Length: 160
Image 1 (cartoon, rainbow, N blue to C red):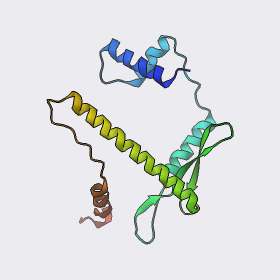
Image 2 (tube, one colour):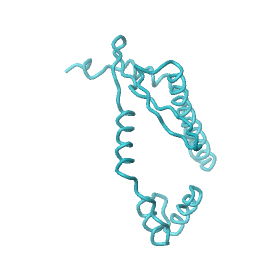
Image 3 (cartoon, rainbow, N blue to C red):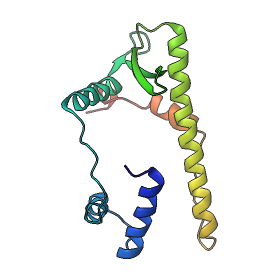
C-alpha cells in the first residue's frame, strides 16, 4: 500500500499532467489504478457498521436541564493497545468519571488548537505568495463568535 507521501506526490503529478487546480479525487484514483496502483481492501460490513455507530455517537447531543444549552453526549478517548496500535473508545458525558472527561476534553481542545495553527499558517502562506492582494485574516480568538452563538435567539424565540 502506498504511503501518504507517495499519494501526495501522485496528486501533484496528476495536477501537473492534467493542468488542474481543482481536483476530483475519484479521477485521481482512476488514473492511479490505471497506472498500476492497487486498490485498498474495502472495509468489512463490521467496519462499516462500527463507523456508523461512531458517527451516531459523535452526532448525539443532549440539552442541559439547567442552561437549556446543547452539549455533546459522547466523546472519544484514545487507548493504546499492547500491539502499539491506537483504539478509540467512546464515553458518555453523563456517565464518565472526571479523569476520562479531562482526557476527552483535552483531546477535543488539542484538535481545535491544531486546526487554528493550520488555518493561520495557511492564510499566512497565501498572503506571502500574493503580496499584491489584500491579506487574508484568520481569527483564532473564537470568543466573540462563541458568545454570539450562545446568545443568538433560537428558533422558538423568533417572532412569527
